[in-house]
Structures are given as structure tokens and as C-alpha cells.
Length: 91
Image (cartoon, rainbow, N blue to C red; front, side, top):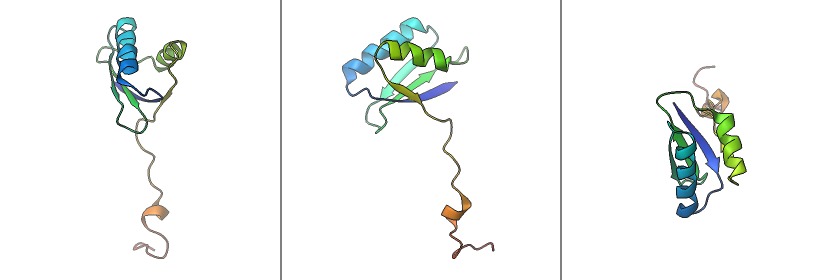
């Protein structure tokens, strides 16, 4: 299982500190950051169990890290956005 979070982490020192805290507290979790992404992504992966998202968010907030869980998949694009009514090949 994988969860993806938007964060406000801006530097690699802070990211390493958070990854270390997560992996010491949640023994089966593997964590990493993508600080080049505009959302400063934190990825959590766990093979043995479901990720305890709420508990993880609370833990991170206590550490001073603001996170937001991102949805599993992007929302589907409405048909109107793909085929505006004037160009719709399927009337």
C-alpha cells in the first residue's frame, strides 16, 4: 500500500529528519520525499499492513509538519472538457 501526501517541507535536512522519525515510529513504513515536485511530496509505503493515515497525519502535525493526503487517483475529466459540445463527435 502507498499513500501520498502534499507537504510544506522545503529542504533536504528537514525531509531526512521526518523520514527518520517516521521509520523509527512506524517500523514497517518506508518513506521518501520528492522536494522537486511543486507539492513537496511525501510517499509512504508499507507492504505488511494498511497505512494508518490519520495516525500518521496526527504524528506529523505534532512534529510541526503540515501534510495533506492526496487522492489515490486523479478525478476523471468531465466529458465536456474532452469534447466541447461544438466538437463532440458523439451527439
